Image (cartoon, rainbow, N blue to C red):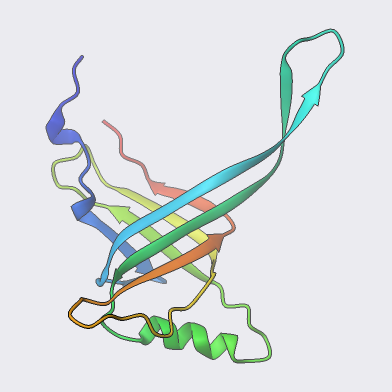
Length: 144
């Protein structure tokens, strides 16, 4: 059966929520889990075998600078005696023509860096927030 082009999910309908609040200024998102493996050589077999040793979650979100709310929130923690800010993000895709919508919860999100200043005359200011995360959950899968 051929793919129905109408059902292809469009990123225009992507949303990012931080602890339940929609972050409307962000317009791009990534998240991936790297599977860390060790190679095993077994006697009597030409195939290289693999053993999973760990998982590493990384991602980012980017968009337009509208407020300093997120920067202030993260800075309060990084300037304290306990600089271990953790939060939760939910990435959602809600294309009305797709088979459904998708929501993915990212747990224990820790931002890697803060853009304190990053601008150029005559251009809109954008921000990029790279992070690591420890665990995810597919809350709502897209299904036919």
